[in-house]
Amino acid sequence: MIKEESVGISEYSLTEQKRIFAKVAWRLIPFLVFLFILAWIDRINVGFAKLAMLNDLQFSEAVYGLGAGIFFIGYFFFEIPSNLLLEKIGARVTLARITILWGLTSIAMAYVNSEWTFYLLRFLLGVFEAGFFPGVVLYLTYWFPAKERAKINGLFMTSFAIAGVVGGPIAGLIMDKMVGGIGGLANWQWLFILEGIPSVIAGFFVLKYLPASPDKAKFLTRSEQKFIISTIRNEAFVPGKHSTLRSMFSNKKVWLCTAIYFCIVAGNATIAFWTPSIVKTLGIDNNLIIGLISAIPFIVGTFAMLWNGYHSDKTGERRFHCAIATLFAAVGLFGTGFFMDNIYLAMICLTIAAAGILAAFPIFWSIPTLFLAGTAAAGGIALINSVGNLAGFVAPYMIGFIKTNTGSLSGGLYFVAFLELIACFLVIKALKKTATY
Image (cartoon, rainbow, N blue to C red):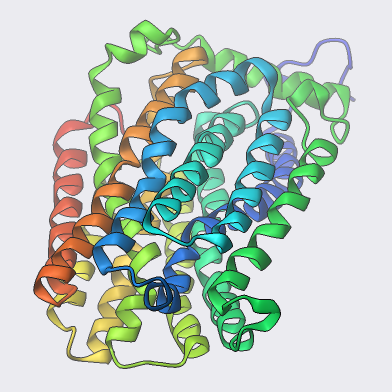
């Protein structure tokens, strides 16, 4: 029998500790995954809208690439303030605000009528979504200790892959079924409207469902709340961890992680925004079939992400789990560009690339919290994510620019493959003292 008055870590057996963290995971992760699936779909559905929108609005591939990527400029400027605000006012209010506003902006994308409205709404989508992903990463550190985080991050980040699995077929179905000017709108306009509405609704559910912190969690007993709070508090005072904004900005490891994340995100943005176009380039014309085929790399990536996170936690090793994943990403992207004239080899390589890119994410995000805590963790996670996500601007724009000037996607894929190789090198050479717990 555990006393309610003072619960220490040692008063729970390892089995009981695992039970508590599993209880928290079952309560939080499915809902957070659902929210990020909505965010991810609203972020990347422009890749499917592109199949008809470019022709209707007479946009070039370069215009599309700039518009797809400018999302991350808004993301960059507002992410750190959003994460610092989350630390002050709590996750529930912050995540609700973010979800509602990005949903409304996604709906507004249906009314794009020029290059500049396209750029503006994509920028605003980045502004309003800023803080969601790093906010959740920070939020999970309130509930789970370092040894659990690669697995937990992996479970949350399956939302990347699941969004790719379900988002492609849903987008393809909407594009197919809403053809013909229904309600006076084109199929790509209906895509933005029908995929934006669920986000607005979900934002209001955040206020009802999501506990701000362990001590506010009604699904936990008082002793379980105290156990989690004491576990996380003890980790925060580990020698060597940085806890202030000044120490965060002066920490070389933070900037190194930012460079690594930039390279990883370049690959993620590539498969997110260009997979439908790559599949179409391979000779597939039906929108629903494009959506179904586009889901294949993300299905494999889901399993790769979960396995890599689980195995990294089991062994306690971070560096090589992340480096090998980025190496697979580089080989896969290069192979996709090289075999562009062979649909089967190109799809195999694209699947390898997606598996490597997605498998790198949960491992990477378990690394910064090994040397950051408190305000430094809030600011550091946001800094890494915001600067790193500028690759989401660079990669789509460069691919669009190269395709416009060469008529081929291959050159752009080679460019991103090179960035993945840089990530692999930096992880192996520069994170030797950080990548274990």
